[in-house]
Length: 266
Image 1 (cartoon, rainbow, N blue to C red):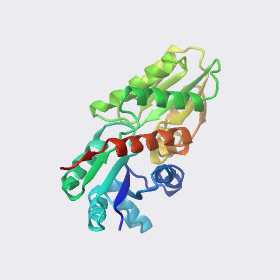
Image 2: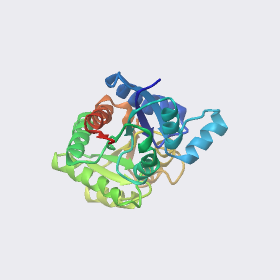
Image 3: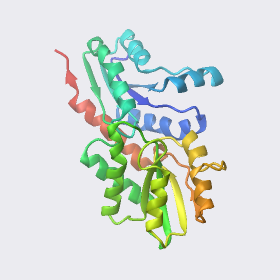
Image 4: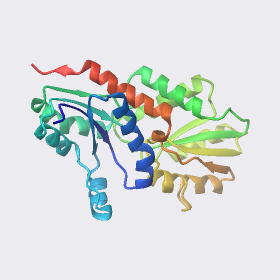
């Protein structure tokens, strides 16, 4: 019987290579720092769950299934730690799906996504600065985030401001599905007239379809192809954030803080 558990909740990915390099190490790091809890996995993307089941024969729980399973096993105390970047749609979905199960547990708590508090932004900024090479004249580092219509999309602009405030004005943030998009990235690069080389980085936990295709793909509409067409030299870093120990450590800390502050049900 698992009396205590930590449920690590990710959006998910159909790319098993990056799952093993990003989501799985986050789960392992959290489990290693919470030895008194059994660690379980859940994904929030129904589309990804269906594709994994159909194509790979891999069945992973969604949040209700994972909580139902834990409750049935007699778990009384559960921490839910998301691997989401921000408090956007997927985190809202996690909370909405989990809340009806609160009465099934003595204690239930939620860890923060990567970017929630001002301290979180400072910590991620510090981690990114540690990972980036030293600034070079003529080189810009462009980060691709997912983007969303959710108001949490403002996180990308705040993170860029912080990088600039720390001296990394060579960093430019854009998104696939939000603002700023690639056109805004072009505008910001155009303001930096000395830039001849662009290094592309995914600002996503996993380096899946967006990183492999939208960012670095050979198709004419990929960011790499469109930058090449504008005359830039382009290099691509295709590591998801979950591959970096400095960033995984931030998720671990959020899980431990949730464990300390979890609300006790009367």
